[in-house]
Structure formats: C-alpha cells, structure tokens
Amino acid sequence: MTATELNIESGKYFNVGEYAAAETAAHEAMAAARLENDRQQEAAALNNLGNVTNTRGDSGAAATLHQQAMTIYQELDDKEGIAITLSYCGRIYGDLSDYAKALECFEQSVAISKEIGQKEGLAVNLGNLGVVYLHISDYSKALECYQEAMLIHSELGRKDGIAINLANTGVVYKNLSDNHKALEYYYKAMEMYEEIGRKSGMASTLGNIGSIYGNLLDYDKSLECFQKALAIAEELGNKFGIATHLCNIGIVYNFLQDYPKALEYFHRALSMYEGLGKKNGIAIALGNIGQTYATVEFDGYNAERAEEYLLQAITLFEEVGAKQHLYGFHQRVANLYEHEKQWEKFALHYKKYHEIEKEVQSEETQKQARIMEQRRQAAEREKEIEIERTRASAEKKILNNILPEEITARLIQGESPIADHFDSVSVLFMDIVGFTKLASVISAQQLVLLINAIFSAADGVMREFGMEKIKTIGDAYMAVAGVPVPRADHAECAARASLKLIDLIQNFVVTFPESYGDRSWIDAIPKIQVRIGLHCGPAAAGVVGENKFAYDLWGDAVNTASRMESHGEAGKIHVSEEFLKKLLMVNGEWLMDVADEFSSLTINHLPLTIIPRGEMAIKGKGKMKTYFLEQTT
Image 1: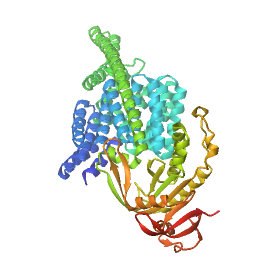
Image 2: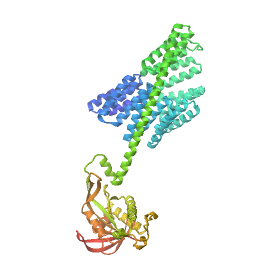
Image 3: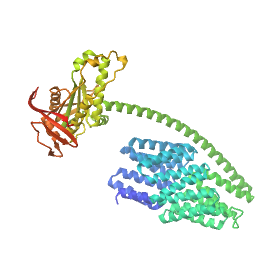
Image 4: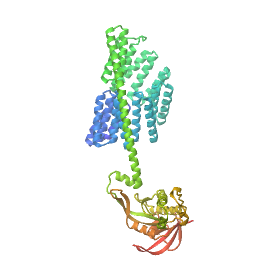
C-alpha cells in the first residue's frame, strides 16, 4: 500500500477506536512516505501518530509529533497542512485545560482557512473554537461559533457537520441547566444523523440524550439511551465508544442502587480502556469502581477495595495531569478514611483535596485572565486585518475600474510585462456628432456632465454584452469584444452592443441642474447623435506605462475600426467587409454571402438589415467595401 492509502487506513481505525491498528498503519505510512520521498504524507503520518498518542493520555509526546509535522508543513509552505496541525495542537491544549493556548491554535487555524478559502477546515475549527468557549463558560461565544460553523456546513452540503454543531449546541444548553432545550437540539442532531446514516454520530448523541434523562432523574430512559448507544458502538467496533457507554450505564445502575450491576459494567469498561491504553478512561473507571465499594448502602461495601481502586485512580490522574478530576477523588478517598476513622490518612487527602482545588481555581483564574488578554489581542488583530481587507478591496475595486479584472489578477500575481496576441477580435469606435460646435456653446460643467452621461450609458451597454471598454479620447469611445478573454461570437457581441447604443442615444435625455446655468442652448442644437464604426481582425493587447498605466490595444484592426467610425454617418453603424463576414459565420457555417445589394437576415434571433455602400476610399487603406448595419423593425 502507498503512504496515502496507509494514512487513510490509520484515520479509519482511529475513528472507530482501533488505536493499536491506527498506530501500526501510521508507522507503516511513515516508512512508506520516506521511501516515496513524500514529505506531505510523512507529516500526515506524524499527525496520525500524534492523535493516537494523545488519545492514550501522553499529551507531551503527542505535541512533539504534531510539532514535527508542523515543521514539515512549514518547510513545504503547505498552509492547509499547517491549519490541520494547529487544530490537532488546539485539541491537545484543550484536553490539558490550557484554554488560552487552545484558543490561539484554533484562531490561527481559522485565519489560515479563511486565507486559503478552505471552507471545510474553517467550519471544523469554528466548531472547535466553540468547544473551547464552552469549557470556559463563554456560552454566547460558543453558540456564535456553532451557528457560523453550521452556516458554512450548510453551504457545503455537509449534514454531518451540521449535526455535530447541533449536538454541541445541546451541550451548551445542558451546561446552562436548560435540559429541555438541550434535548431539543440533541434530537435535531439525532434526526440528521439518522437521515445520513452516520451511526457513530447517532451513538454519541444517544449518549448525550441519556445524560440529560439522568439529570432529569428519568433513569429508565437514560439507561435505554445508553444501551442503544452501546449497541451501535459494538456494531461499528468502536472500542472507545463501547467503553464510554459501558461506564455511563454503570453510573446509571449506581443511581438505581443496583451496585453489583454497576460494578459489572465498570469492570467491562475498565478492561476495554486498558486494551486501548486510554489512561484517562482507565482512571475514571477505577474511580467509579472505588466509589461503588465505598458506598455505605452497598451490601458489598469494602473499604480495602475502595481504597485500592481510588488510590490507583489518583495515581493515574496525577500521571496525565488531570487536576480537575484529581481533587475530587482526593475528596472521595478522604470521605472513605473519615468513615473508617483513619484520621491521619483522612487529614492527608483532605489537605490535598483543598490544596489542588485551590490550585485549580487559581489556575482557572489565571487562564481566564490570559484568555481575556488573548481575546483582546485577537480583536485588535481582527480589526487590523479588517482595515487592511477593506483597503485592499477598495484598491482592487478601483483597479478593476481602470483595468479588466483578469488583467488586475495577473498584475497582483506579479506578471510583468503583460502582452497578449489575439487572432480575431471586434473593435468598436464611437464618437459624438458635432461635438466641437457643441463644446463651444456650453459651459465646462455642462460639457463634462453630458459626456459623462453618454459614456456612462455606453459603459453599461458594454458590460451587458460582454465587451471591454479600452479608453476614451476626447469625444471618442473605444471598446473591444474578445479581449482579454477570447470568444468566438465577438462580432455578434459588438453588433448587438452597437445597435443598443444607437437606440439608447436616439432616446437619450440628460437633465442639467439649475445651478449649471443657462440651458437655452439645448433647443438651439440638433438632437445628439453618434457615429459607430466596427472592424474585426488580429490585435495585440497589454499594459503600458509605470505611472497611471493603462490596458491598450494595437494593430490594423484598431486603425481600421477607427476609419469605419470617421467615414460613417450620424446615427449609423458603419462596418467593414471583414466584420460582416465574421458576423455571418455562425457555428462554422455561412448564413449568406455578403451581398452588394440590400439584404435582411436573422442572427441568433436578432433581425438585421445590411445596406451596402459599395467601394469607397478609406484613408490609409485604399478602396474598401463597407456596409451599414441596422436592426430590422
């Protein structure tokens, strides 16, 4: 198997709690990646090993493995890999209750995912952020993260992601003691998991529902849910899930005072956790067994066994550094020694209980302070990023108004010089008839408003028909179809745009503000008209200049289109024979031969009239056959 296939196998084993098999596959993937000289798969194998190692309770060794993976991804500048590894590190810090560092990792991962447009990673890490906020009791932030994650998962069509965040939302309401609201979200998650057939999600959600019914003292329903969850976990072969549900069932039997049954399930869970090497789970199972033997109401009350199991649990919790569990078990063993009147041992563990509880509370206070500072810094960074993003967006918008968007993208990517050749394009020139006379009788303000209104209307027509405005010179307007993105129907686009322009100008009305002065000149001048010229052929295009650079077009096609416009007539579209031939070629077939007499035809539902002008002398070109183009009414 290849390194990629072995890493996939490792992930599958990990997801069903087969940690030994997952570890073996990850080691084999590592060896294969090194043979294949595949650094990315080597990093993926290190991350898989880190996940297994962390699950077994050795968070320090897991962090080292993830850091090795991070180093490789940084060398490769693999941002997606960096984001994934940051997420794994965040989970380790979360397990260690170092929530400030967990937040930092997840926030960095979220930022990278946004940068590279990796929406799935973004959604996952928003969910992870929500879990951290849940642990530090910032429930509004947690709900905000879950909601944002669900929106992205919904956009991606990822129902499993939606279900996970619905379930996590239920956990928030559980912690807020709103059991009924928690159940509402758990059942929504359950419905979605059932819809997509995600049995692992069904099992975990049933476990959550069972916990809620336990809180509501409905132990029968609680037991039913845990047993269903156990059955699914067994069907999937998810050993970790099996152990967790066994332990939960034991806790329910403890509440029901069926202590022998509780011990049976705790021992089964213990055996399963030991097989997985999950120290945290082993400690919890040992502690529950010890607590059961320490229950005075239990006919099998056994102080020696209770002491043995509780002390073993304490030792393991010390090994994994789980102080939040540790002080509670010191309290339980202290209660046991108090009942047995072993006062020295009672005093020792009672003192440790208070010392660790105080330490945990102190650490929690410090963590909260670090988190607040981290949040403040993150808010400042986000504000700076937003300012930069807004500025960049504004600059890009301005640049896109100066240059074609495709050219802007190429410039931003560092391409220089930009010079392209196009085999066939259609060039449009338009000018305002009688502009010189008009300019002599109106004010500068009126003139600028008039030109701006006409050219802005022309800009809208160009956008409508997929043409690119190149420039304006005085009262002349130049645009092109087929640049910067080539298109086979450029002649049709230019024809449609020209017909629309002629119609628009014939019905053009400009309103001048009273503040612009006398408007009597409007009645003294003819109706505003334009001339349009069209030609097609090869052309070169590119960006010129360093300051105030522009995207321009060169070639005979440009010069000839300009001649078509200057030799045209008011209110008409003057086209070359080359343009007309291109227009009449549709899907590789001639619609008709170019005629020397009046003719009508329809191109893609556009009825046209072609009016031959015969041969005429065109400056710089000699004799040319040209035509007027009109829309048939």
